[in-house]
Image 1: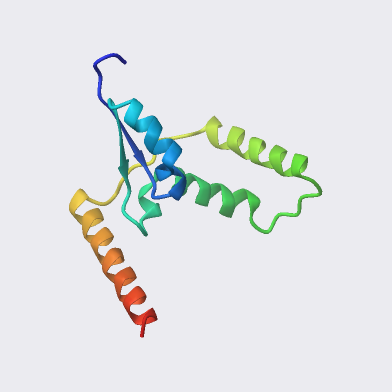
Image 2: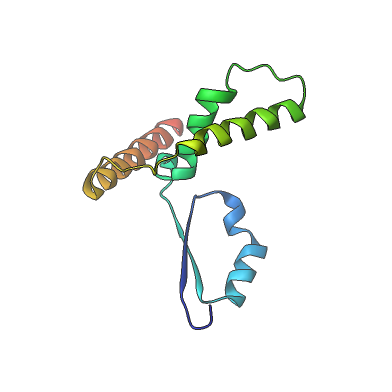
Length: 116
């Protein structure tokens, strides 16, 4: 990776901005983190996948042990991967950015109302 800029998109999880992470990034100036906007986990494709596996395989399940839960997850992943297709965005970039702005505005309103 010598001389190559690396850009990584991550969510706003606080673990991405700890002093240890910031120190590591300072030692690796070719790596840049870009954060998804607050309140927009739906933008993250991994979050989309977690939602699918939760709804279709885990929620309302009864698991007698962690081992059984892990097997359920592994079996679902195998099932999914047997006929996997990439996620396809159906919204334009402008629609996505408008939704992000709306969510941010609504979050600000909630925070402001909480202080009253």
